[in-house]
Amino acid sequence: MIDYGLDLSAVPRDHALPDLVAEGDELDALVSAAPDWSRPTPAAGWTIAHQIAHLAAADANVLTAIRTPGAFDPEPKDADADAAAGAAGPRSALLDRWRTGRAELAAALRDVPLDHAFPWFGSQATAVLMVPLRLMETWAHGQDVFDALGVAHRPTGRLRHVAALGVAGLGLSFYAAQSPMPAEEVRVELTGPGGELWTWGPEAAAQRVRGSALDFCLRVTHRRSRAETGLTAVGGDADKWLDIARVFL
Image (cartoon, rainbow, N blue to C red; front, side, top):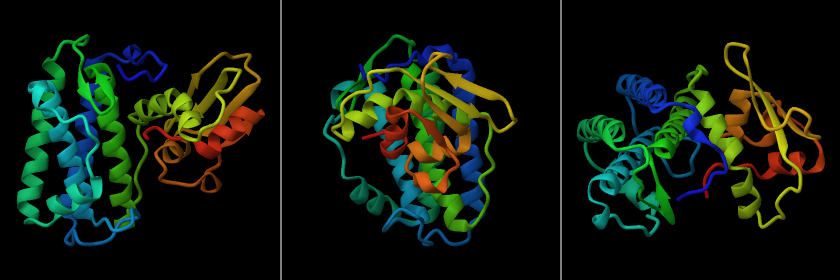
């Protein structure tokens, strides 16, 4: 099982899954109205079509893992090659494939038992983890598309799922950076889109990260550098974390 060090079951699937669907629908409305899918996005070498092709391929991988786990290939894929292959075909076919895959994946994640583990890259996963993971990736790649089109990406309460994965990714961040794990827990205090406060970690912790939920999500998904956010840190470990923060390898 992938160990993100956080109890993601605190958000029931019947709340998280509609958020995943809504995130995909929002991006769908944006790209459906975009006249040119060949426009470059902030990801080097990736157009809007590459971004949608990548999301479609990732959804298909999850479906395979759930439906036919024996056919799932646990070796990491070449994301650039997969995206290029998907982007090479007709836009209408890619859009249809992405839409169909999103709908089938939502149904599969709704129906699979919560404690049913299925294979994933390097480990295993469950619907409890996969729903926010798919939402995070849809939001992050969607951000690339919003940026490419010069359209403001309005933050919503769905960011809480992304932020929770970001907090859970503290250990992953230090592991990937080959840095020692923090000896103390870190308190994270984020301001949500509606002005609400989202918190994780002990209230009395000396190590702290503060800022907007949007900035934190942009940082952990590597859509913005630390300097481009208003995030602040108290304590050496918290400060280091903001430099190396990530939510995926």
